Amino acid sequence: MEIKEFIENFAAQFDETDAEVFTAGTEFKTLDEWSSLIALSLIAMVDEEYDITIKGDDIRNATTIEDLFNTVKAKA
Image (cartoon, rainbow, N blue to C red; front, side, top):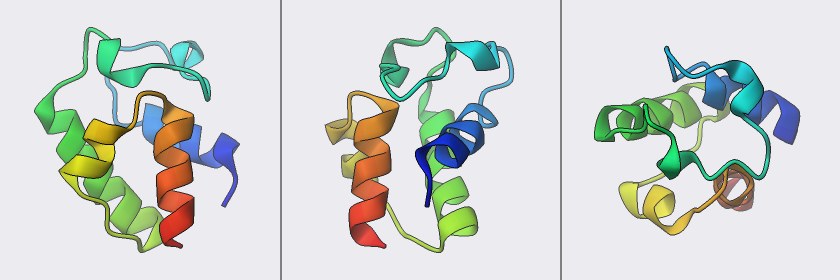
């Protein structure tokens, strides 16, 4: 699992936010488009793409995309 691919998959969950905004250090919950529906989309994406189950608490405890990536990677 590579962080670049994870960021691309992460960014694909957002319809209105420019893909260039997304980096490992992006504090995703501060984005205007962030919502509980996107959180659910992220949970589904991680399950589908990586066959790993994450929970709302995992997202709540992450500040940056890299934080969430590290959580997912630790569960692999």
